[in-house]
Length: 180
Image (cartoon, rainbow, N blue to C red):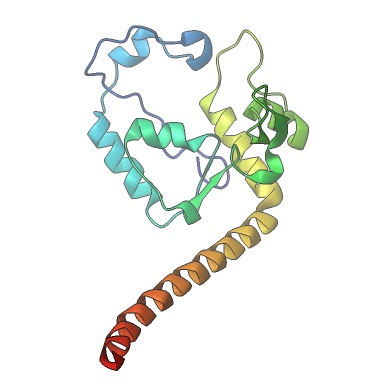
């Protein structure tokens, strides 16, 4: 979907392997949907890459979608509501560890937006899920973008320090060798 929630791409992918479980109760996808699929994975990947070029990608648990499509996207152009720290929950592990864990999109939508999505007994609606993730991002966009700028500065500082050390090694070593 785009910034206003209009659908940009909705397509089923022609399967090259037999489907053993459509997970219809979650996905809403049936054998009939895929029997009409026109796009190959490669064609879909090309379309998605064209749409993503130099654009911010917003969604929830995007790693799964990107992995399924076998594509990558620069970290600074990804806004994943599952991985945005202010949206995460603090958990104690049964193994003694603790840390931040992603919340379910359903829980985030209710908590942050007051919206009920992914109702029990009904399959997920891909547009509704995408729109909820977009609304979550829009709600905190200013702070999130500021966080990205800070993270980028930190990474640039680290890279500068690494290059500086590399340069010092390159220029200092010959000098040290001459003194011996």
